[in-house]
Amino acid sequence: MKRELKHWLKFGCTILLLALCDRGLAWSADQITLTATKSRERLDFAASYNFDPVACTAALVAGLTQTAVQARGISLLTLPMTSASYSVSALSVQPIATLAAPTRVFFAIRADCPQGEIRSNVEAVTPAVSRRSPYVTRNQWIAHLKDRFSLNRNALSDRFPALTFTGAVDIKSPADSSNRIFVVEKAGKVKVFLNDPAVASAETGLDLTSQVLSSGIERGLLGLAFHPNFAANGYIYLYYTRNPDGASILSRFTLNPSSSNTVDSTSELVLLAVSQPKLEHKGGALVFGSDGYLYVSLGDGGGQGDPARNGQKKNGYLAKILRLDVDHSENGMNYAIPSDNPFANASSGFIPETFAYGFRNPWRMSFDTESGRLIAGDVGQFKHEEIDLVQAGKNYGWSIMEGDACYRPVHDCKRRGLQPPLRDYERDLGSAIIGGYVYRGALLPALVGQYIYGDFSSGYVFALNLNNIRQPTNSILVASALFPAAFGVDPAGEILVASYQTGKLYRLE
Ligand SMILES: [Ca+2]
Image (cartoon, rainbow, N blue to C red; front, top):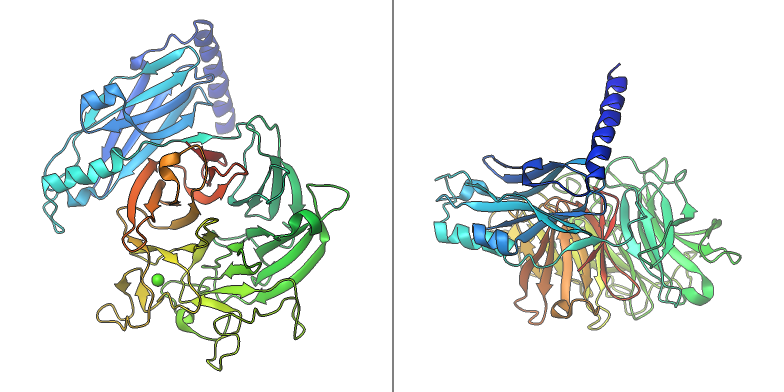
């Protein structure tokens, strides 16, 4: 009965919208409802509309003055308007609990349509005030907002309107002339398509869903890398959670000789099988260095707070970034140990695959193609997210430290010999870092050399300026509500972002 009613409502609305459609885009501000909801910890902006959205793109804009919003507006969220009646749950500004004085925030919705731009009224909201600790002065609060709004000059635009993915967690392109993009879907598929905004569909290159265990948010097919000589040998490397035992598997697969996009599922050669204690923190980033070796990230294996103390263990594969020579084999393994691995010959007790250790969940990592730096985003526990410059033999601290703070014990932990993060941020900016790439593209010259990354829960896309590596500066490029799960670089060197929320791939513009 309920279902029938829903269906009728949908149908009835469609009729109504067809009528609106006939009148063209004659909608006005009174067809848009803007709201801002205050709570103790956050300020949520939302917009809903009931007009014909065909070929329009909605942007929710905000600022600290009405004039600023009218003049330009700082885009908080941009989405294609694909349905007629829509609610945009837009942005949360945190932490409202630290406000010490009321500041009005203005916001509006702007629609870019082929017939021109249409704007709603400008509304305002005054965030809640709290005098509880930590106390923040009014000027600090304004600076806090400005940091979020004034730097928000970039946008994420749906790069492949015809394509939608389910649980995209990795985006990679082979270094050949084929102009293709491979997307890893967590449930176990690799999708392949041409890097063309007009591309109509993506081909399923490999379907491993029956052998991949993808239950829970952190397990599944998690990472892909192309062999440096992929154009000649067709080798791709995949990292996945094995069904049914939950072990993390690193395997090589080979592209079908008869087809350029599909992978021979019987070609699997297992390199590593790592048993996993719990459901979380699997890592799964795979990258080849310019040295030709494969770097593999593994997390501490879960649960919360590193109960098994895997972070600092020398033996075992967990909580480490490994470095493997996949072109040779030795001792019955389908890979060899590079002779210059930091613990290759040491009697230190480390597994010889170890390149660096002390990570919690280094979910995504990448090499800067120009500087050769390996940079990882290590997802934190309850307080700190961090970016690490990964160097041979170093200890990144988990679970003695979380980011730049002591974790175990909470005070006066032994920091000696631990490598501090390049950047640490706390809960006002997010709670699950998504490592990205140092930008080397052409579209955004101001960002060249900056590390572009994001946060899954806050939706922010950030840039970390590494020109002065000792004191990198951070800025917010986009405040989205897209739940970015992975970044990628397209064959032209531009940044792509996979939204776990919408299933779309967005280009940073
Ligand atoms: Ca650390």
